[in-house]
Structures are given as C-alpha cells and as structure tokens.
Image 1 (cartoon, one colour):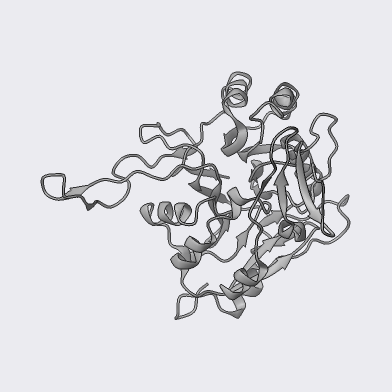
Image 2 (tube, rainbow, N blue to C red):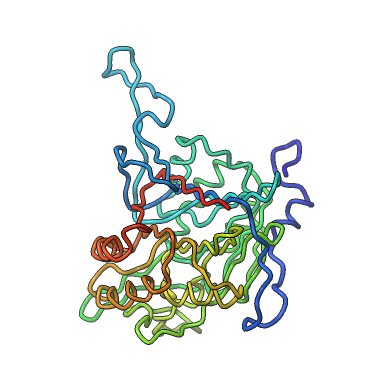
Length: 352
C-alpha cells in the first residue's frame, strides 16, 4: 500500500479515507467481517514487564526491544522498558484472507511517548494507512510531533469529529480552570495529514473498520463529564457530552463485534449499544480501551456500568487508560473469564 518513497499513494489514500455509511443511523450498516484483528497498545497508563499473556494477549516484557548503549554495565549495553503515561494509542491491524490493513488509533499525551514505544516494539509506521482520533483531548492527541518525526513527510487521512478542534477546559467548582491544549488544523495539514471531519458513521479500509461518529446517549446513568467546558463563540460554556467522542468497531467473522474506545466519554454502555444497533449485530465479542470510570465524578456509575456490560456478556474485556482500578476490580469480579488486564506493549489478537 506504499509507493517507492514509503508513503501511501493516491490509491491507498482513497482506500483509507472514510466513505459515508449508507442509510440512516437506525439502519444496519454492512460492516464486512474480517478473519482477524490485532490491536497493539503503544500508549496506556501502565506497563508491567512481568505481566503474563492470556489466550488473546501477548505482552512486551523485558528484552522485547533492542539493547541500548549503557556505560554503567559491563559490556556497555542495557535494556529498555516502555513508557507508560496518562494517554492512549493503539495500532489496529485487520486481515481478511491475504489482505491486511493497518491504522493508528489516537496518539497518547506526550510528544514522543507513543513513537518511542513504537520504535522499541519494532512497529513499522509506513504500514499506517490512516490515523483515527477518538476525540480531541490532549491525552489522545499529544503524540503528533513524535508521529510526524517517526513517519517523516507523509500523506495520510486523519479521521476526526469536527468538534475535536474546540478549545476545552476543566472548571471544577472552587478551583482555577485548567485549559487544555487545542489542536491546530494548520499544523496537522502542514505535516501532511488530510483532514476528514465527520459526525456520522464512516466505513474505512475495504469496509473492514467502522468509526461510529457521534454516539447516541440512551442510558440514564452515563451523563458525560462534569465541569467540562468548551469555548464556543468566544464564551466558555458547559460541555459535558463531549460529542466528538467516537469508537472504532470491527466485525470478526463468527465471533461478533470488537469495540475499541479512547476514553469512552459517551459511556461504555452507550457506545456498545450504539455499535450493535448500527451494525445489526447482537453479540459483543470484545471491548477494549478507556472506559472513564475513575475519580469521584465517575465512580458512582461503576455499578450500573458493570451490570450492563455483564448482561451483554462479552468474551473479552480489556479496561484500559482512564477506567480506574476500582472499575477494573469490579469488571474482573463480574466477568472473570472475559477480563484481561491492559498494559503498554500488549498485543491482542482476536480471530475467527
């Protein structure tokens, strides 16, 4: 899918760019099944070099990357681990028959953390056919400088919701507001990205990947992010819903849907139900990514969230990033056969 210079050509760009999903959101979208999806986590809140693998997960332990110069050791070489940070990023590879596609989902928070981990894991960035942003927050968009340096000059679609450009801040009562960095369209286009803004569901890469677009809010307990504001028409206004939050969905043949979230601001249950409704499927095979259930503003909805997910009975659950340890413990307790701990460097393979 790359030309001689190592960058996607016009054919690859056209393939990776999303196309409109036929029909209204209430109509099933024909998401073609894949034989395999592999998700490699490049950025997450934790790293455990001794964490054991599972039936779906392989881990990057000590010695996973090449040795590096280290004068303090006899022989002058040492080992590296991976960078853990409050952010999320993953490489998503799908396979149907002998045809494979690869994209990058989010970029982490620090300028070089995601790319550094990618290099240590020997990830080939020239395989990326598109970048998808779950939403515009800094812990998912901070890694673009490292990505651009890693890639060099490139031409690649960047799929995001138009509200990802909004200036945002956290303004808790009785405390100074914390304004978040705001994405610059000019910087990204100058870096070679073709911006593809959509509010609606989109199909990518031979119709093997669905981006949900805006997620319907249907539960009575997932009410967004309190104290979150956006600057609109020059004024700071409440913005609890974070409407740019979207998820990535893949249909694994004979298994069901795999749903990958960034922070899950739309609500984990809302997102899964939305994905099932969009596609007409009735089984959630796997849920991976941030579920945003940590902190006093969200721990109160852990119980109804866990109860609803248990009713959906997924085969695999990997609660990562902003899920929080309390919610992870409850999910491990209620879904012991499905629960899989997350960590940077983990590679999850889900196959027909």
